[in-house]
Image (cartoon, rainbow, N blue to C red):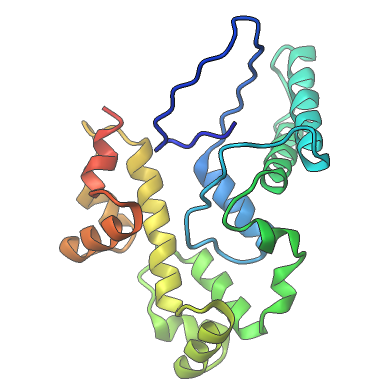
Length: 224
């Protein structure tokens, strides 16, 4: 079963049922998926709640988790940071490939990076690398090596979106992740939104509610 921070769940099972829980960072999942796809992930992943561990991909996920857990137990929780990072990458990649989500088909389709025009990919790379910087369409087009108009046409044809919409959606994702993990006693919606480039709080609130179905402050208060 897969649960996200926004899920409200109630489970019942026999006392003899074994449980094994794995907690993953939402930001790590998004970044790893972005690397696998070769492009930023502008929208929530939206996982299906079930994973079939009997299917080949699910069985590989179970094996990866069991092996990682076994190595941690064998070395008393102490492991080389480099080795630990590789194990984590294996588990996250196996999880993304075995679960059903918004990007499953694209991920299963292979290297989507090679299917995009070079200018679009350069623009996506620039957006991803400068997501927290005050960049605009002219900056993105310059990094891609094409005119702003040409880039907008290329994005429309290949991503059914625009460069600035992709940037906004990525920033909304980062804001949502920070609101979901910060303490409302020490963080504010405005400070987090401003840090990710949302300077007009009213417009930001409308965009956030359209995306997540609630006010930004509602997300932050859930952590109290």
